Amino acid sequence: MEALRDIVEWTPEVVVLDLGLPDLDGGELLKMLRAVSAVPVVIATARDEEAEIVRLLDAGADDYVVKPFSVDQLEARLRAVLRRSHETATSPVLQVGELRIDTTSRDVTLHGAPLELSRKEFDLLAYLARREGEVVTRREVLAEVWRQPYGGGDKTVDVHVSWLRRKLGESAAEPRYLHTIRGVGLKLVAPA
Image (cartoon, rainbow, N blue to C red; front, side):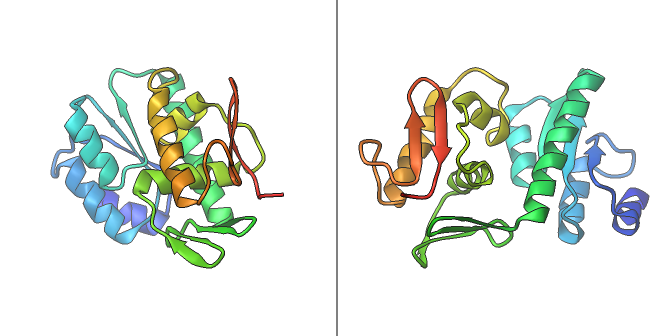
């Protein structure tokens, strides 16, 4: 409880939270922290059950690392979380052509009309918008949006891109905003 008070008073850039606290479960502390602060939180714990990881990420954790981990890995995750939080803090509204993404309210409009996006669709679109015009590999998207290690399920990205295209009123054959660069990755650009 002292830590919660200190976080509110001190306003650190990031919090590394172990779930095994002496007076309270770390998951409960995360809920309390989310009620009073938007500070990025990285969970660092020995608990490696997938359901627990998903529950805590959905409850507001920004990343999750399982013990044992190296100092280098933790530092890299902290840098990534801080980079994302800095990007969000410095540019809460992203504009790509007629596509407007408000990262604070998580609202997206296209030509002034609201788009209904799932959480991951929003996260993917915001990530691509922050890197407007840059080609981003599927592996980068998996690492940054899904927080999965490099390698693995590229189909997850493809499925979400397909859903996003449909909602943006385009297709892979006739892209307007989302372009696939064959054999390389994706990029988000304003239509010509």
